[in-house]
Image (cartoon, rainbow, N blue to C red; front, side, top):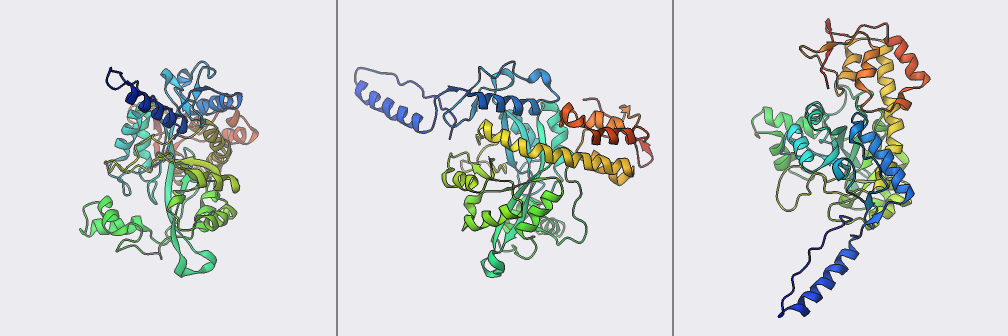
Length: 418
């Protein structure tokens, strides 16, 4: 949907003018049905595009297009020929690597996304954030912004009826620093833990095989007892600085009561846009419950005709802007909380929270950070605007950090040049 397909002209010959004319009319009808015409952006779309682009290219100001006025959208408000070099600003908000049940390493996923023109990639492996550091390291080479994410496996139980439970997957999108805190050892093991145990015991060769053979929804080793309830997962996401989005609602048996309950628990949005263009009822549901409309390819790297490619889901620029309008204040608050914790207690564990997904690394030959304030100056300009960082709360944190030497494990932290 909304790709603005270019219909190739059909050559005419003396024997098939009439047939080709009919085909041309049919294709024109098809093009119109799929919303392929080019239109100049409305004022609202232009402002939305400007806001989205400024965030995407925060650390690459030269990549910003000089004017959005010349950009166009199709009939569905999907951007066309935007950004640097006349390219679209493509968001991919649902992807998997071999850190869960994908076929490619995080690095290979990033490389493939880059090849497809993706500018913002959310790595959303099942029940783990372990692929994010590798994805970030590779993304730096290509100028791609990584949104740390995770797809959490949960269960939904209508009115406490355990027999009517069904699996529900919730996407969580975090800031560059990740969750403000994470679950401890007391949490029940999920499918990823079981998959790792199967690999270690030699029953399968890798995590992907564990999921494909045994741990898929309804699979022979699938158990409904290990996942948290959907409402609890959403509350956890909201309490740790994340954006909670319902994944592939079309897979649910009865989505309406589920969406209603999850909205009450704090759900921010739901997947609506798909690469096949089908959305209809799900868009209406999102509107009815005041939810963000998002989407992604759910890429696993399996190959074949049945898998959507990275960057293939077209999200209208207005929907992307609404997503960032909701997400950015939440992310900014989460980042501030993480830095404030370090300012109050400059321990290795609190420094780890900053460094696990940030651009700071212990790097041979790098430049030492003179004080904790440098962490903010070095890590955050690619994620937060000057306006977001120039407020009394951040000023107070910077003041505290200016008296702290950045030491990790007894070693002064060095940073790689970007």
